[in-house]
Image 1 (cartoon, helix red, strand yellow):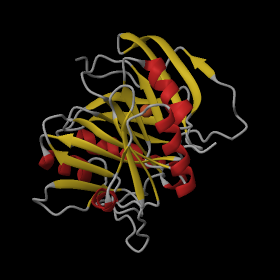
Image 2: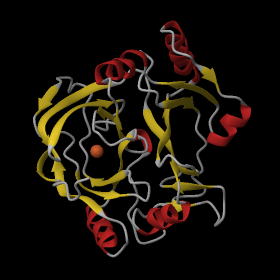
Image 3: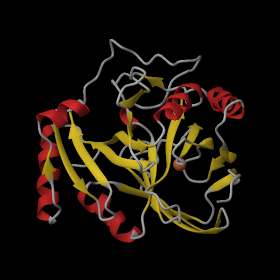
Length: 295
Ligand SMILES: [Fe+2]
């Protein structure tokens, strides 16, 4: 079955691009490839020209989730599947594809209203390797894509079915917990490659779509070094170091200038193709990850 293979990119909208430039370079160690004063920020974390775009605007939230398939055949199959299901699908024009650096692109909204772009044939620039602004071992991307996003949705079951039935995501597990920062939480974790999840969904009363974006580093010590940088910066750590119960990610969370949290992790589980049994957990973390800020 043709399926989405990776989280390719995200577009964020933010009120303060200068703060994002500082945060991305000096805390996350992303390479900011946009010149000072540019209309948007492009953040590079690997051989691709960019992976995170931050545009100026009032929303302080994710505005586009970019997903990709392997090839034009899978692209056409999923396009037909979406159309058959009655999804309002728009085809990206030449300018839109060029701006994203893809061969072809579809645009549609998921049942929660999230703007999704589906593409293939992403522009690669191995001749311009990732050059971190400070000493850093790099990020885990490649076949596992950019990382993962946790999206806040009210209609969890409907959104879960949409991503599995139409886009080919596979359910990894569920977390139903009585205490997620002092409130109930019901989350679904879905994968589309070896990364345990590229997409998690659940309801939290945050007032925005993006719960968090996760970036995974190659070197264990880069988690600690990033945490040192957080403590030396004006940005706030929002969850303590910990290890997630399901994807085994060793990580902490930091609040971006948009209020959106970024999870900075190492050691995420790579799921084998034959590991098909769906699991349920009643906590999100084996230890740690205490919520440090109550809003
Ligand atoms: Fe996460």
